[in-house]
Image (tube, rainbow, N blue to C red; front, side):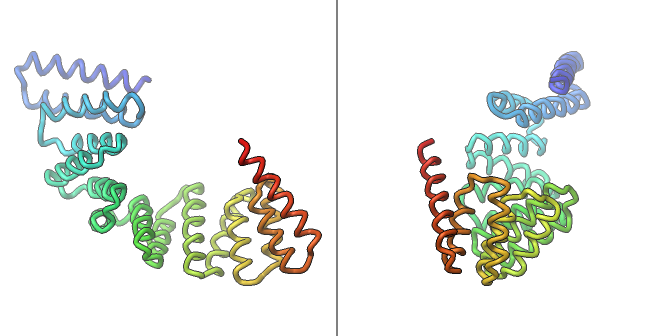
Length: 277
């Protein structure tokens, strides 16, 4: 990997300069940044590279114990290794050294969430948003915590804000699907249908949107549109047992027993095939 080779060379040169200059502060600073960049690449690569990332972050911090980005970076490695306690320590040290970085608060918030400490997580995301109110990722992650706390209206507000700040189409579709799901959760089915319809306009084969819009139509008693959406799912994926079952339920309700039995039978057969795999 060219970028990794480049950072490896920068570290070699930095170590040489430090030795020659008898630990000149300027050269140490350059070496710390090079080690940090090297560690960050290893962290992004993941897998077996995570141990190398730890070694590089440890080395960077041995040269400069007050370099907050490396505490944050090492915290990310510990988080990926599911060592949440050590990750929290590192994120906290990064924050102690520099409280102005929203990303440090955000990362600690994610770690608290992974530990199930939802109130602590929410407090950290609130602080991160105070520092960086235009970062859609923070709203997304705070929305997840609010959902877990069953504060669904607040979660929807965060997804709405995330949507406003998101420009990439794939991300917008993901956010709309999320917001629609939680609109349906609080029985705002018309709102859910609006969001799913936008998704379908942008992505004509989005099974998730068709299926869940069909369920929302079902909840408001619009059987013809519910059947149409379940049929669309089946056209896209003719092995979708849930769509056959849900469509069969509506045919059953409408007294179309032959059609209902056909769909139920296909759903059962597909479910059995899935269980055998």
